[in-house]
Length: 294
Image (cartoon, rainbow, N blue to C red; front, top):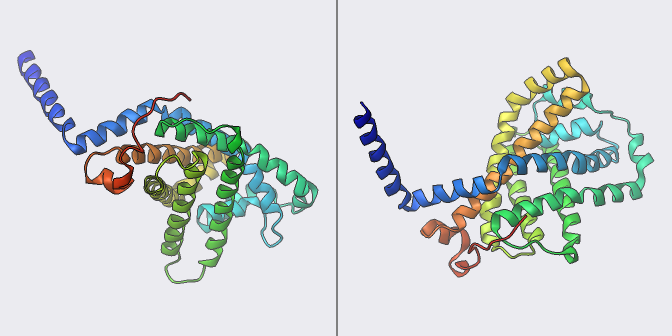
């Protein structure tokens, strides 16, 4: 019995060794190695926490400035593409007091945006770690603000597009396609801006497209998953349960972002036709590994 198991183990190791020598095997191995090196769960939780405490307050203030919108809850529900029932649950979880906008004012909004750059810095650390490039200095601090504005404006645009697609034929299809386009543009621009264009735009566009696909898939899953979580959380823990649901969903999106970045990096390093397609023939040395910390 032991001899049979040993022979089977050796055979499996030989097959795995041959597989790792193939282009697909090397791609999978690079993806796994990069995923382990980035500490994905810690990175995703950091991004989710920073988004919740930094970016969400900005969106609350922006939602309050919109007189035609009944509050942040429905604003976010439209942006996430939730069903009508879930939109009502989310809308009821956050105050709809329109006086928030008038009490905060433009100065308060500016302070909120500057505070939200903590999310941009967390993104910058993640991208620099994955792509093995040094982090830009304080001279590029304006890019942190640009990143926050890009993400917030994308969320606001998605909410507006959700309203615009209501009543048209196949609204779910249009919603999916428009989200795919918006997220591809945003998650191509964000790393390009944060890393000061040190990575080929073509490789970042591929990574942005992968990110957009994962986020759109999560959006579809959320139509089924979120109503259950929101209702059970609110019933058991009240507002605190809704907070847990929000952070958990932000973690899922952040995890997808980290995974897509690692996959994009691995594909850009590929020696086969896939790598040349992702990075372009003239950028063969642009994605060469460089050791950095952070």
